[in-house]
Image (cartoon, rainbow over all chains, first blue to last red; front, side, top):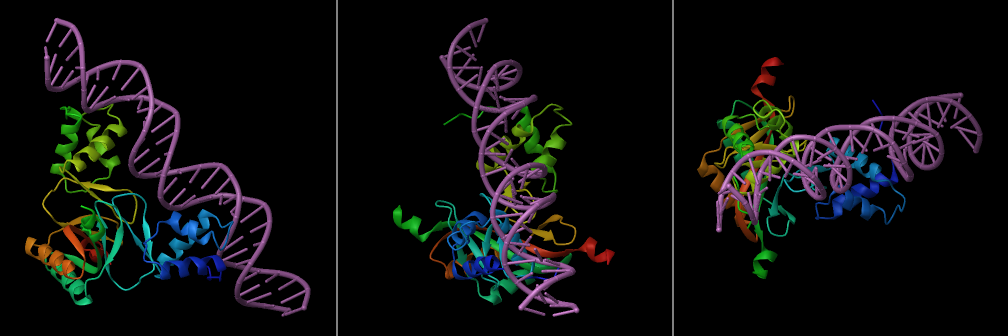
Length: 131
Length: 131
DNA sequence: AATAATAATGATAACGATTACTGTAATTAG
DNA sequence: CTAATTACAGTAATCGTTATCATTATTATT
């Protein structure tokens, strides 16, 4: 069953994910971790991001523009994509609301709903200020 | 600018999107439209899917597994991804609930929310039957 | 502590999805 | 009908991601 082995690279990737709120792409993680491990490989970053996602220590977020992004925040929460500047931001609904949405969805649906992820679209406060 | 010009290929793509509920990938659209236009190019399919998306006559859906999918249903609605078989299904919340979610989200968020798209995860009824 | 076993790494090649390019054909305007 | 312009098919190029493989690091065993 492929026992997990410690690696400094993985720790660094995990630490970065947990301490940033940038929702970085794999490439951004790569450039960041490269400061500590100058010859880390992009493949290693992908391998570990996928591993962390599989064991539930990271979350993968898909958006309609460009590559996937990764998030070290594990509590259920949602995201906002600014249609002007493209920034991806956290957006917290209280747990009760998230549960409520899943419950409403289950009413009209013939299957089991275990989780959900909402992507909100609009204009972020920075872009509003500029116009 | 770039005035839009009619094309039979685009009409066919659009028609297929509007009459299926399969949420096809670009490649599936390609294989389908190929029956009517045997030597249509995959590039033409992509170009038109993106065009239709840009002018609001189609919607692009991103999931964490594989390529984007396209949807010709324009009314706000949501989707369900079965984590067992990978099927992407429509999931309707009544308009009121969708608005309510957007309203709840806006309370905790400093920006303008214009729309949202929720992807629900779980097990579909077919997979439940099989187990 | 030395050795054996196994998993992780870096480097690079391969891959699948998507976009860009180009010369030709179809559509619209004058 | 002719000119102008947009869309096309075909193909090459690009981008994000995964796979391969020989070497290195970590863990288990003696």
